[in-house]
Structure formats: C-alpha cells, structure tokens
Length: 280
Figure 1: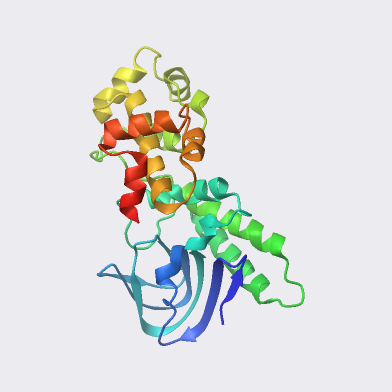
Figure 2: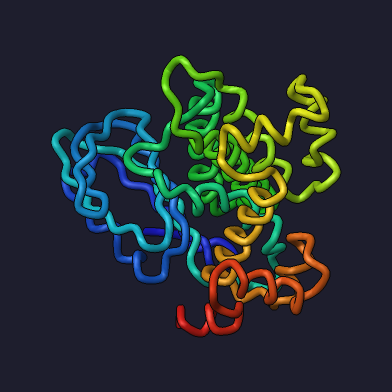
C-alpha cells in the first residue's frame, strides 16, 4: 500500500508484478518519477509506446498519461508529487519548484529520461531505493531523511534535465551556443552571472562580440532571450502554483507585479490575471 509523506507525496513500490493498476493518482498528480528496477515491457505515454527495461527511469508532468504493459515480471518504485504539494504553506515552494521547472518547460521531452551522467543514473536508482526502504520502516522512519533524499533526487533530475537541446544544429556545428543556453538556464536567478561581460569571460568570447555571436546563432539578443525565458518560467508558475503575482515577480527579478504584468501582456497578449483565470 502507498504511504503518503507530508500528506501530498505518495511513494509506491511493486514487486514482480505482471499487471499494474497504480495510475489511480493521475488526476491529482503534479509530478512523478517512475523507476523500473527489474522486468521489461512497454509503457504507453500519451499514446506513444516506449520500451522499458531494468533501471529505466521516467519522469511525468501534470498532463502526462501512461499505461504499463508488462512482458516479464516487473519491480518498480513510483514517487508521486500531488498537486497539493505546491499549495502547502509548510513547504518552500520556490525551492522545490526550481528543481523541476526545467522538466516542466522541456517541450521536447519524451520517452525514457535521458541522463547526461551515467553516475547520476546509478546514484538516482540508489536514492530511490533508500527512499522506499525508509518509507517502509515503521519503527525508525525519519522525515528529515525522506525530505533530504527527495530533495537530492529532484536535484539530480534537474541537473540532467538542464541539458536540454535548444539549438537545432548540425553535427559539425560548435556546441558552444548550447553550453551558453544551458548556463543561462542554470543561473537564471543570478543576474550578475548572465550579463554579457560574464558570459564572455565564461565562454572565452570577446566582450564586444558575445552579443553578436549569440544573435547570429539564436536570431535573438541575449537580453531578449533571457527575458523570454523568464516569462516562460512565470507562465509555468501561473499554471502550476498558487503563488501570488508579487512573489513570482520578485523571484524572477521584475520590479513588482505591475511590471511583470506589463511585460507579460506585451509578449503574450494577455495579462497574468487573465492567463491564470483561463487555466481554471
């Protein structure tokens, strides 16, 4: 049976199963990590079939629907973050949300989660095992261990998801622009680290050329790219959290909610209030 942590996180573990009915939380699930430990079969994700095998890991976001079809007995652990998770005042929403927002904004995400680091994949499997075992331990269960393990799991996922291919380039094209994009995404909350001067120093490009280089590769200025990405993050928060407009504005570096609303309206053609209302 699943055990709920903090009343809004559910951990489920199934051993050597030949049939699954563990998707009943889909309607109230916000974010989910599914780790196939043993077995093989097919997982149908939003209508597309993907094979799974031992140590396969999948990450699902709010709109995803999946069905598991087993070929050989399967052992799996699923961690489900329910929608109420980001509405709980006792949880630091922004801190947790930052860990997964790259996944939420990855429009090209499909199939099995791809790791940039083999060691991260191995470590994540070990952490999920620790989480399951701690969750099952009725006598020595420690909420701090569970919380820290969850945090590390999300950090590893976020670190690997940050390497999203943004640039459509040929195999022979220099990957420097992709590295710059990943760096901007990673440091979006640290404005001093994503100035033209800092980017030029970081990527060994002349100060007076970095802007021209970026514009040539991306067909958009660095300043506008950063603003567009911040608006995308604002859109994600409006869609998936109940954070106040002023909180979103402050976190993303806008002067206030009015400033965010003005920019959002100019770029999206709708106010932040109207956008959130339309989602409900």
